[in-house]
Length: 346
Ligand code: SF4
Image (cartoon, rainbow, N blue to C red; front, side, top):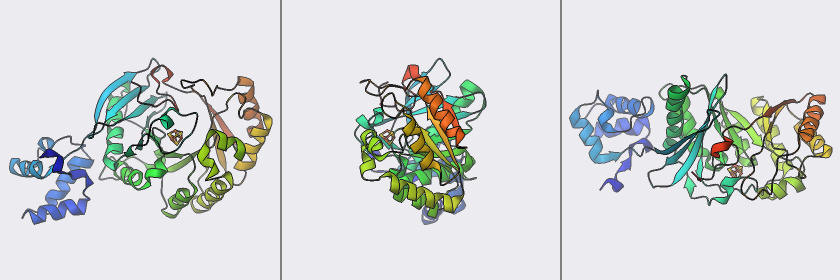
């Protein structure tokens, strides 16, 4: 029965080579199949045209390729595309293509639902069902790359792990996916064009430093005052700012990479001067960049974007302290594809 067959993409290259040797074939056949799976993104064994019919049948008898299926694609008036992606067990996640004048960025999901509980985020209302496998993350990137070529006439240039889920809660699979995406035996993208965005899991930030990862780190901070941060991101009670800061110091000492903070300013929550000054204090220990992100209200309207005067105040306080700051307009609002809006509503 199909369901009992193993997903061939769970095998390493060595395991694939060993499998062929066990079948009395040559080990290099494993290399060929590996290339079809990870470089040419084959959806079926039939696609593997330089492999004999007999071998393809043998693979069919032993394995499946659990490829994702883009169930629904929505295109925004600003060129943003949102994919509802069906997984082999019928669960659904979302991923987004964000085009700008100079780049096309894939925003990919790492979990079905999320185990964290950020109160401003639509995904937090979905129960965390499971982690995504490396191939399911990789497939989202390939699907978006194809759409980028088709609708924007250029390949995908950047990837951010800012879709559904907390990537550092699915660390091993995220790392394996990035390996396939960046390896010359995979998609060959530069790790410098990949950003893993975390809500701040101190232990895992330190692990990333120890693992000497080459991709970039962004932290969804949203407040540098514990009381306020805990009220909007309740897990901050478990991982307070002092722990996060210590982990980021460790990360900076190991990588010397500038730290990016994602930060939304909400009306009557974190829009005062003392909030901006606390952010400056928090950033001081390492070269930092702050992205002030426009907020897209979710159903209950509890969180509202701050007035532009508050954003201007943040910009001037940060700039006065030599901290790079960018104000980011959100994209794809009309299709619920903007930051914090991914909730399988399509
Ligand atoms: S913001 Fe990210 S970490 Fe927080 S609940 Fe949403 S998906 Fe999870």
